Length: 299
Image 1 (cartoon, rainbow, N blue to C red):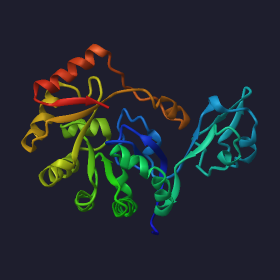
Image 2 (image 1 turned 60 degrees about the vertical axis):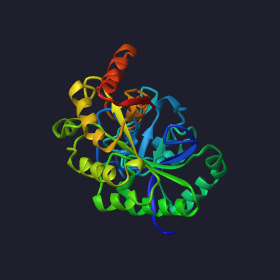
Image 3 (image 1 turned 45 degrees about the horizontal axis):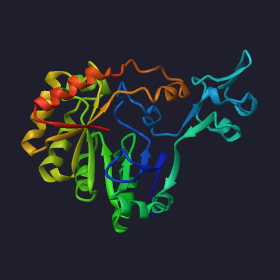
Image 4 (image 1 turned 30 degrees about the vertical axis):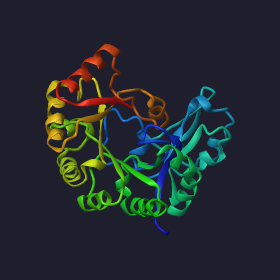
């Protein structure tokens, strides 16, 4: 194995990224910029500095080593000027508390497989395996393909979590190899999709169609639900109409949450302007899916 890629997290014992206990490998880089993204550090391909001010011990090592004026002291507090930060990682190397840390590092496929093999016995006992996620893992296509083939060669169940915004040739090849796909549907209307994610959905719908026509048994639909953004009667009806001809009667739903708010602060980014569901409102949305013949599971 010789291909390399940028990974920002490897989560062992995951229970929300496919069946059984899984190791989820999170790739950096995503073509979409969803308004509600809970992992903003996943969007850029390159490694990025994250600064969690609440973890700062005030040692001042960062100011001493930063040559770009990005690490600053103000009123007894150490802060970051992200407009000056070049992501060199010098402050992260000197930080004793991980207040400064780099999100994303280069791995080769061998290094990833060594981590994956640690939990092989748990995979077999639980019906689990490996999930490649992101970001959008297909943006690093050669690296992803090498890892998928390595997992399959070792008899490991392999899942790909994707938004579908990817090269059709690569996607077709992956369809013939991986065991399962968690395929996100953000919005059925392309103009609304562009407003919410920065891109239209024509390519996504093309790849979804190819997947449902060739390997419908491999596709598990996931819908991130955002109050007032993609939970309308019209959009849910469009989702149902798209899926029913292929016999799809079940969708996973991921209600909006704010678990990633600290990450926006750590990257020097503004907080997303979205809101969470109140219980009664979410129940009403799930009833809309049921009215159109779609079973839902909250994940």
